[in-house]
Length: 396
Image (cartoon, rainbow, N blue to C red):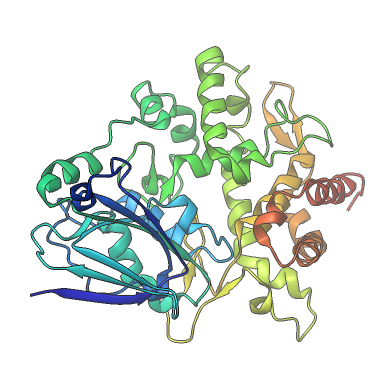
């Protein structure tokens, strides 16, 4: 009995069998279809018997998928996530109403082959998302019944060992582990792929990179790579550890005395972003800023990244990183060679947070209400840095 599923799609492309020339029989071979679909339209009844993996949604990888899917203003899930891979008997596209019909006639070989975690998480998060907020790629193969087991095995095997996992084998993250050993979130940080935890060490390295005055010593140096190139932050950290070990020549050793302050500063900005935006002016609704996500009535509060404080708002990284990066202007070096603050960063953030947030939101609006473009705007990074630098000249 055929199981036909029809759903709305955003785009559709068929990839014909490249081995087909003039042999009509070759048309019975494998065909590929690529679809981009709004996650709100992903159907709930895709067969899952074909997926060889158990969908455990509490792993670090699953948490990263969920964060990528639900991060407000990101609009890039279809690029960051591998999407779904389906096997089917037949695929038909209806161009009149932009729908696709997928027939799964034998659920022992037709259904989800890869992307089970993504599919389950989409199902759980659909009610939290709005139409047009996130899209997902769906690849569908037909005519692969005879090679199904080989296909499922190949698509679910990964031989790549990520750099951070290799670094963990060499204990290269001890600098960070020692710095956070007394913090409440220490057990939430994971240093290897598929480890338990809610905070990826790559997120920590991207954040620390913002304050590296060895790498970014001047006004015209921009740590934008922290926002859009975490892999480079990992590579740089490993390179510094390989070359300088845990000596004072390593900028991350120099940073060790202020690391906890950096994490607390991040949380303070997350927690008070709405207050900084309003600046004490009634009627300024932070929830109306494109990219900001407000907690829905009856839903649990959001949590800040490190210290898990309750907040009603999620601020896009495209706003957070340029503001936090500006506080590099407060970094100095003490007599022992360690980084220190020229001025209390928490005091400075409270004092000029409204100015920093106003500049950031205004920039986003001039860029078409685009938080992603905001996070990569050099002019904004420079202006925010100058604003914080000016505070070092004031005696309070």
